[in-house]
Length: 165
Image (cartoon, rainbow, N blue to C red; front, top):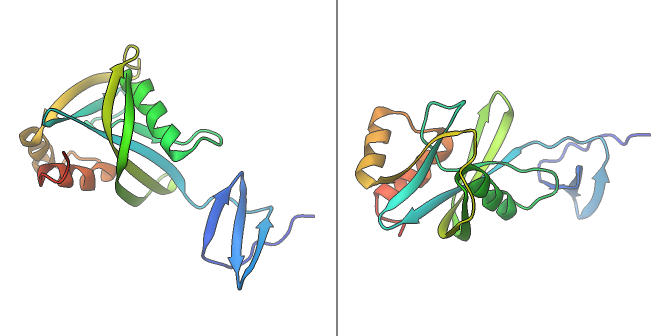
């Protein structure tokens, strides 16, 4: 018999079950569904520029990234997505932005890491139609044109303001 979902705001997602915290009592709710789709992205900074990609299905240049698969960590997702899309192995430096957005998939929580290049490990992904290094002036132009995706607004702002190095 499935237990009833508790009406509690704080939730932590763990292995397809939701951990509820309620008046000091902790328990699993078996029929709960995740409230957020988690996305991990990387702002890869190198010699004054950042690496952006354009996927075949997208019109905008954006930071490489995507959603978690299975039980992988957010960090592993960010590293995997960069490798799949760009062919670069990266090292994560720190989280630079956490942004929540609502779209056709529901609530999406996007975590963007500052990352540094380690090496070119393989060819770029087949679904990537463009990959290029963009300097501050190029990013300013993208912002001015209004072609910045929701998850990149804050990381791009930090880069343009010189807070990413």
